[in-house]
Image (cartoon, rainbow, N blue to C red):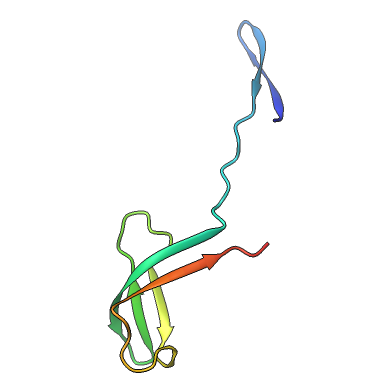
Length: 78
């Protein structure tokens, strides 16, 4: 753990530096079918703080009618 030096009115004290928050390596979101446009099907997630709120999928991505809900997984590539 990295240490930093911080001075206060009494002199100084050694304190540990706060850890940086790391982004998740994987996001999994359940999304509901919202509507179809001319060329896409639209899926949404209306929950507060959802990392993915709207996803557009080309109509040819699904055979026939779109499903009522989907699960989307996004993985970070490093």
